Length: 456
Image 1 (cartoon, rainbow, N blue to C red):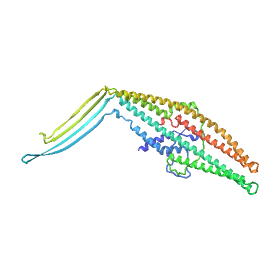
Image 2: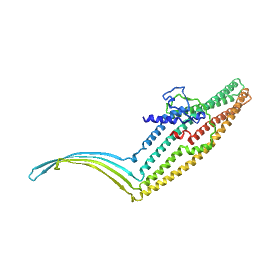
Image 3: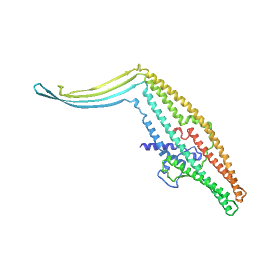
Image 4: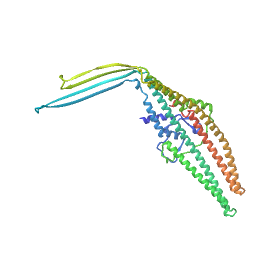
């Protein structure tokens, strides 16, 4: 039952997942759309399916959800309710006595007794310096803090899944780029080998071309290894078999540039970490109220019903029985406890002040980090256009260099420079795309936009 409740809660959250893969802010996701048991080798994964599976099966989310259930169970009316207890005790004893006289005679006697004690008692604290109200409110704030902690786990998981998802796309593009470069290096090597075989080359060129071909092939193998490892990381976070044959076929498309002022405004209100600290500040304030409550008088009410039965051969009557009700009030006033109450209040007040200062510090740090990340994000967006121009120019230069190399008017070393230039320009563009997308997702996280506040 608890697992089904958790799944329904996660399904509700999934309805507000950030659809970062196609520049749309929120999208509706149905966890039932993902085949949880499928191991199809040709199954293509979307970002929504990856997030859906991870939120349902990731161990961190399940553990955090269980902790949230504990916090929910702790919110109850216990501080306001009376305590009712029933007790029953039954005992039976037998005593054998022997007396020895000086004449050698033995006097024997025995005594048997039975006792039954039953009681029903009620204790009810009517007033304890508002402790019960502060305690109840504290449990509610602890629940709110638990919800924000759970929300933080979910948000970070979404960011991590998105980061790996787009990293896989970037790695796949790099693998395609290196595959293209290996093909070019192989063509160059074959041409150099032909020249050597017909005697128009000393052999130095084709050996150097072979070195470059091996170097590019090694880089390609390393990048394929990185791609496989990235898939393993993704499958681990999704909690599916690590040897699954699922794959990703997607592109990285940044959103329209985000506005800094809007992000700062949203972060001040919706950031999950700040809201959790605000709940912690409220808890510290309530701890101060709880500490002060011990200085007030307390009023307790108690009532009970008792039934006692005693039977013994030493009692002239057949048995002794008593029963009846009792009730009363207890009023107490704390007068002196060695300064303990003042110490508690002072320490609680200092904790409240620390919580407030920590919140102010966190707000300042959040805005600082957000501004710095936004600068990086803006530069990456600008770099995408620049690097695309560089990549196109480098590709045209590479094509022209290839023709010159075929005609023998360009040396192998010069041709390699054109290759490296194209590879670096393409790699910089891929890096700028990935970094811009990752910064974009992190900015949404800091602004509290991955999930609306009402989703919790």
